[in-house]
Image (cartoon, rainbow, N blue to C red):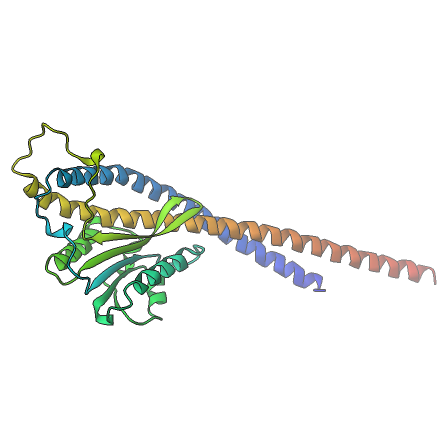
Length: 288
């Protein structure tokens, strides 16, 4: 059994750790609230923009938009993978890494030079750097902490330009989707080519006049919508990160409190045992 001094030292250590985890939970919770507000404000705009765009595309099947047509064969792929720059967020980074690796396995027949991974997040970069068989592009590595529309637009513009010129044949987005505070879902979405599905709900109602034409409008609207998509995904991933960190710090705090209770019980038992032993020694000495 450990001495009372050792147990007391462990109690002090756990109490100090609890102060840190409690503070980190409060910070993560505040950031989560802010991130939730940002994504909740962005989603209605993004959804409506997407609905208008799909309605125009479904209304006229003769429209020729290069970004909507898949290439005959996927010879080169680009994957935009998003995770965190820091740790202490539970399994968030590992889940993002695992999903990215699963997506890369789908293109195992492609050579290394035909697979580009745009990494956002230092932790994801550290995990992918240990693997082989693809190119890691770090131009946007630190974008995860504070997503900016200007940088998201720069990345989206590069991807659209490469796709339009045939330098890449497909673009995938891999990130952790924020479903709730306790649930973050590893997600993979095809970014390019843009999927066009016929849907009665997204058709433009009859009677609308579009000037100068649907094709001219879409050639302006689609790049804006794709830029917005990248930015929305980054905000979604950021909310998921803060949610994962909030839960992780809450779990750490709960575990710390349980350990603290056990140590205090152990300390009290040891203290009682020591007092009893001292009393027995006093009583035994007085009887001699």
